[in-house]
Length: 84
Image (cartoon, rainbow, N blue to C red; front, top):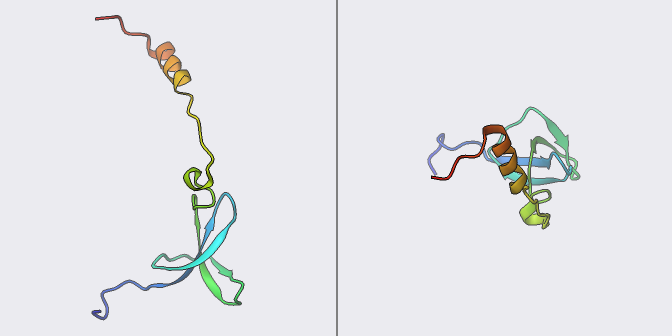
């Protein structure tokens, strides 16, 4: 590898904002926040909105969108178009 052209690749702790689950991995992400990990070392902490612990695809939780209600609300707000 060429010296001086690659970003700093270091250990980082990512924490899920909704579940609080955290995991240690390596990344180029930087953060001003730090956390002490179970090994006694201090690592940068990056809080993320979604991880595999909270994503519906990985948890099996399905969200049902009320599309009929959205269509009805659209028709009430903007009116129904006539047949052409």
